[in-house]
Figure 1 (cartoon, rainbow, N blue to C red):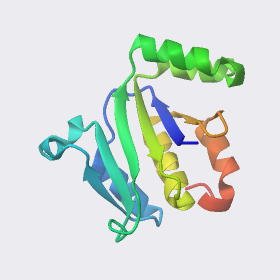
Figure 2: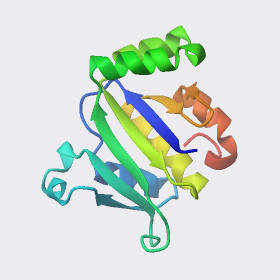
Figure 3: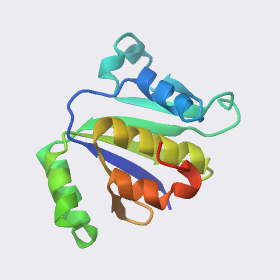
Figure 4: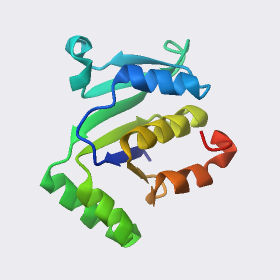
Length: 156
């Protein structure tokens, strides 16, 4: 079974890879970012996908892959329809307002602290709604932090 964690953001502007790297380091989880498409290195504000590794682990681990996708009406409608059984009106409104989704594809063996901190950073920086597809559960940032206090510690 594969796992994906999505962060739905109402903001148009991309979170820059350098900002993600800085925030992760600030929270004690240093990472390395690699653009999926080498052509995007010259225009980081227009990135669409990248790989995230724990710092110093590039050769030792399978990366998290992070994609940034502009939400079109068809994607929004199919997401709402698919998850309607687990969606509150608050979550539905957040999905309706979302302009971008940050999709994290998670390898089978994952550093849970890396994943949870990355989701927290993306949700905070984007004012985003979180969807973890493994348990099919939506979270606000506060709910996510509460659920993962054992990993995040006190609120970052």
